[in-house]
Image (cartoon, rainbow, N blue to C red; front, top):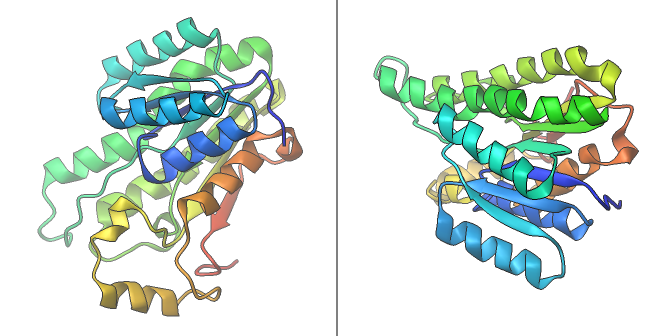
Length: 247
């Protein structure tokens, strides 16, 4: 799949799934605007991408801060001239049982995982409408589909992303803009690396493909949905979970 001339903004691009998405898109010829809070990791990623002959630039942005989103996306458009593809990937967890879950941890997760996707989409949609072409891809989670004990805030934010995806798909479909979601299952990232071996082993037992997923597994799905090959797919949730959830 070739994306020559396209520009993508990937949030949470400094590590894990976001980094894999940035790399996969760049390998297909996309110019990548990599956004995250960690300047050092972003600079390393951009240097790596540029070393392959592709275009990339780093934009420091905390998606929990509306003004940072606005200024960073303005800078991206100023640098590249447009944004064709938006990957709303940035996310955090603040796990706790509902009876002990603090309001601050609820707000932090909803703001970072869900509200940021609305704000980023709002800032890029004008560029997409003007050119009558766009791809918006939201990274949700299998737990946004099934729920998960101790993750009421995280599951709610990811379920909200699915609803947001479908609403946006209906709003902008007539302008040749698609909006889809990718729902990863158990993926080996920094977010899951702190889980104990026993928990990981029990998780694998629930996966028909009998392995934990990789960030690249998710990135391949994102690249497909961003391409012209997926031009007749919108409002869809693409499961990348090894069969952990079917149907």
